[in-house]
Image (spheres, rainbow, N blue to C red):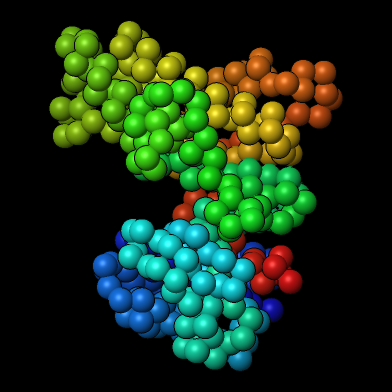
Length: 317
């Protein structure tokens, strides 16, 4: 049995054919080229889906279901109610894909939820029923799986952990609130924190690193820290505390089996993961429980979204 998993992003549209063991058989992609009309974008979604099926040596008759992850809020009828970076308002995504691909079993879900589903079933979750995926990127994305099901909430906008406040009246967040986890734990926040430290410490090794790379990145402070740079050490230590604060909140609220951390910052490996586990261990509420939440690095990378989208057909019905 085969499914098509689609990842509709602000930059690219990716479609993959996935088998029932969660293996990607073939993939096709094209630039999203937003802003465009929904009809134009969905024409391209159908095109890359058909191309992936052809690359797999299959026909649409071999496809059991189609799943798509998209930015924004998706309701139970498969309508993308709002996706600001695509300019979508009440786009009937399920109907539009069914019409273009001729497949009735079509499922639409938020992209972060799809990535969580992919990691939970096919990645580091190894089938865990209670699972949280957090991505430290431009923002802080997240998806929550409880008893094997995606947590959508009453208005289908649930699971936005990046917008829980960790500092009252703190840094301004792009969502409009102040002090959100995203405003402190995203890669964007880390870069801002690094730049501020560089201004405070003009002799920091971070200046040399940034000059050599041509920019300040999420790696700058970590690379300086490894050289023993005091400013770099301060930035990394404070950043990890911010990330840990949100993780501890999730552990105390949900007690999942696993929280996986994704995003480019996770390339730091145990330099990041080891202190995060230490903070969670020290501050979790369930101090006497023999079973504790595992904090692990995501393993599917960019494939998590398409694999999770392909799995939608087996968990939604």
